[in-house]
Length: 149
Image (cartoon, rainbow, N blue to C red):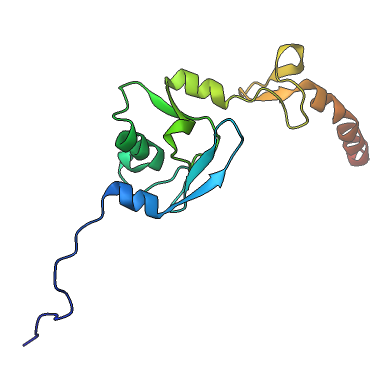
């Protein structure tokens, strides 16, 4: 016969979602206007996630615990750009269309504006910089000359 464990005096209680969230959070500085990011160090994809349920994304969970429910038809936008951050001061309630506008790049990797005459929309819907494309033209011509017999 197996005797019950003598080491435990009381049953374990499950930690709250907020306690579990805080346990896996590090504070990281960001730009001066926003202050400190609360970056979740557990599973990130790139959003922090405590469990597999929809409401287990750390930014959504943190908002609900600290600010209240997220209204129907609204999403959270990260002003800091750190998707694993759940600081409610870095989050804003926006519509899906507004959130998508925030994601759209306003300039290419070389700093050229992605608007007006410099913007080319490819047949597959991607946006490219005409100035960078023109700068790469000599490379493509050199490649073509090397391939010709």
